Structure formats: structure tokens, C-alpha cells
Image (cartoon, rainbow, N blue to C red; front, side):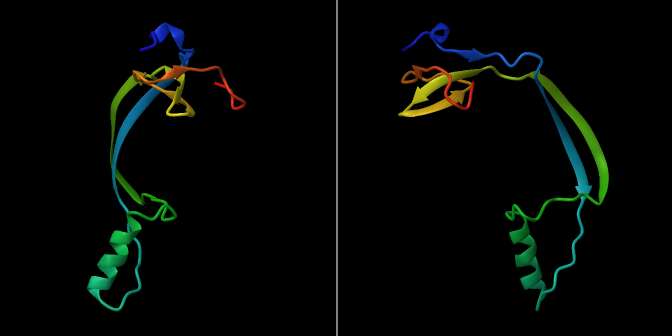
Length: 101
């Protein structure tokens, strides 16, 4: 296994990740032939990326935590160039590509 020091590391200076928990309510009108059909349509909205959750009434927002953003390592894994937060035994160090770090 390569040593961590052999890999280029993006320390992400001055970057932090904050987590919030938001509780609220979303109401939409659904046209359907039956209650069962309306429930089916409503459940399908959970997986619809176009649905775009727009919270009408936020009832609670809690601050959870702040952590330093994890450094990312430039690796070649299974023939693919990528940035990862954890190095695996088979990872190979690489240089930045056309996309930068």
C-alpha cells in the first residue's frame, strides 16, 4: 500500500460543513380517481427530482453540528481518476487532470 504522504491532498482550507435538521410541512393538490391513486402519486413524488420540496410552513430548524471539511486525495482507483476522502490499498497516487484538483 502507498503511504498517505505519496498522494496529493486538497486540505480545503477555510471550508467547513454545517448540518441542519429542518422539520416542516408541504401541501400539494393531487388529481386522482381514488384515494389509493392519490396515495400512489404522493409516494411517487418522494422519488421525483423535479418535485422540488418547497416547505410552506417550517415548524422547526435545529443546528446539528459543524465539522472541518475532510481533505480529499487525488487517486487512480480501478482505472478511474477520482478524489476520495479515504485511501484504499489499491489506490495509486495521481497528478491533477484538466478539471484541476
